[in-house]
Length: 184
Image (cartoon, rainbow, N blue to C red; front, side, top):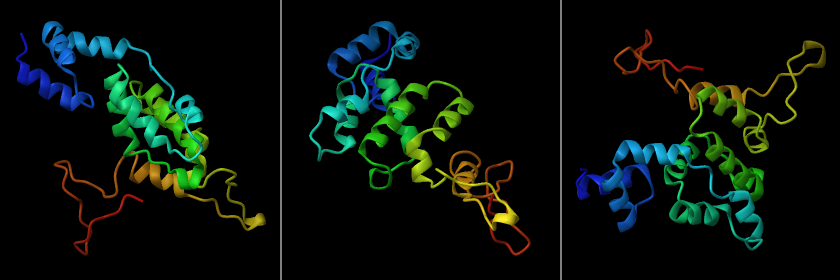
């Protein structure tokens, strides 16, 4: 049986904190069964729906934290929160309802594959506005047009391979001048 200390530590790492009942439940069923429960649990509430009933001046963060603290799909909330620290959008650029819809998107697809997640993020209105590719036009010499490569750079640098080329041991690969080699 899982010790109380181990159960508390696990819940601190995989949720936004467990109650006494959550700790006891985890101790009773074990980590594998708890993970199975969490993976099988559907998304319990929509941030967009919550934010639409909130006062007009309230920010989506209020809805996010309400769900993070109270909703039972804690592993989903914690994983989506971690993804939101990488796949960032802002209410300043895209608006409150789009940020809430984006948070819902992260929760809906956080347990899927990276490819599926990137596809849904790419087609989200929030990301299209935030990374300025909404209405982007392909390059054309006859139009004297250069496409906005902001999103492509973000996919390469922040969403996947990182800012710097790496050696097999994870250290930065250095160029002839001794400086780190950027990936983009």
